[in-house]
Structure formats: structure tokens, C-alpha cells
Amino acid sequence: MLKSILIAVLLIGVAQAAIRFTPLPRHRLDARPGPFEPGVHPVPGGLKVVRPLAELPEGAFERLLEIAQQTPRTTRIGDSVDPAAFVTRSRLWGFPDIAVIWQDGVNLHLHSHLVYGRSDLGMNAARVARWFQRLETGQG
Image (cartoon, rainbow, N blue to C red; front, side, top):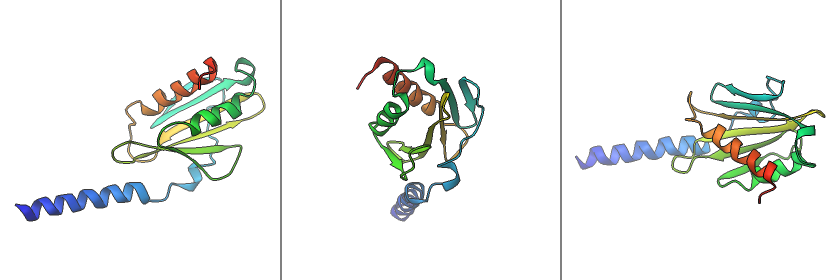
């Protein structure tokens, strides 16, 4: 019985270490996927938001980067300014979600998606909604 418990604990530890320490897919950190028309677009494992810059507060891009950086368990990846990539890890297991933010002169784009699995249970949509709420209300 004790041996089975120790093996289970060891396997859980190995799985968690693999999730936390496996390198993120580099091609996702600078990808600029569509759709490109304004709106909130569900995509597999996350969402893509496109907002006209004219409808957002002055300095919206820079402010959104600050808001993302202030999010708990979120780290900016790399030193690229546009696009800017962030990884947010889940509290317990450390599952990574990647958010890529860029602007094209007319629109602000944010693509937020999971790395592992098929469903993020709405976590990316909720996080992005909070980010845009803070941006639009001038909070924090």
C-alpha cells in the first residue's frame, strides 16, 4: 500500500515538473493569427479579440501590456515589444496559457490560448475580459 502511494506521488511530481518546465512552443510566442476583423472570436482553446484603436483610450497598447504584466502568475516572455507575449500559469498545476498582444496601426489584437489540452474552461476569456475592463475603466 505504501509503495503504491509513493509511486503515485512520484508520478504526480514528474507530471507537474513536466508541465512547469517543458519549454513553451516558440512559434506561438510571436504568431499573429486571425481572424482580423473587429470582435471577440472564440478559437480552439481560447479566444482572439480585435478592437479598433480608435474606440480605446489613448495609449491602449502600452496600458494593456502593463495590465497583463500585473496579472498574478503572469510573466512576459522575451523582449519583443510588438508582438508582446505573456504566459499565465494556473495556480495548482502550472498549466500555461499564452497571450500575444499586438497592434497593426488600426486595431489592437489579443490572442490568448492554452498550451495543453482542448478546453481552458473559459479561463482565457475571463482573464482577457478583466484586462479589457481594467483598460476601459482606467483601473489599476
